[in-house]
Length: 262
Image (tube, rainbow, N blue to C red; front, side, top):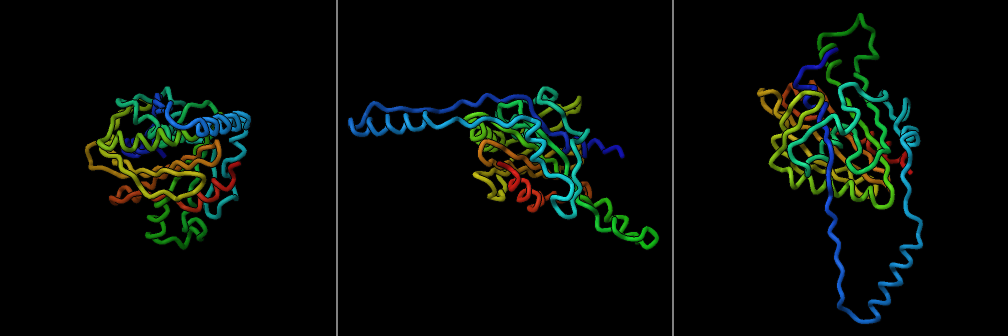
């Protein structure tokens, strides 16, 4: 079924590229003992093997699959989402990682990426078709679809990716514009949302999107890091949006996906 332009606007939020300026500092002050301690710590850190990114093929195997989460069907990819960052143009570079995460693309600098779609099974699906009521038929369209993306990074790239998202939430609070697959849309507001607290660190944010001049809809995205792998979650429920609500990200999906990460 072809989605409306408003639905596609919410489902195709994505980005191009982000340059993250890393703030580093050093000081010449301090005692010789302090300097010696710093040198020892640096030597110990340098002797530890740097984290190596998983490949896209390895990430594919870590995605949630059929049967992993009760009452959810897993499918590979989604035609409504961009396949690469180059397909999306934004008007504010700092907002790029937000749209990447929303589109199940890597929010940081890596080519190792995999994604799939988890769809909640409508309760009416298990009923005898001859016994379906009007309410059952209406509820069949009240379905949550979650786009899950996995990306992996060398060294401290995963930490940088999460920081880019966190910084973007602040920098883009006033909104931003983007163009994906020849369709323009406008995020009017970005705000911090409550994250699941899963993994080693997590960031969640809400985006208010202009639905083709027919009001705004709120979409939630969460980014979770476990080791040097980052998982992104973005959910859409068209029935809820049509009623002026927002789609919550299913907690069981976040928990199950993060549990599969190395």
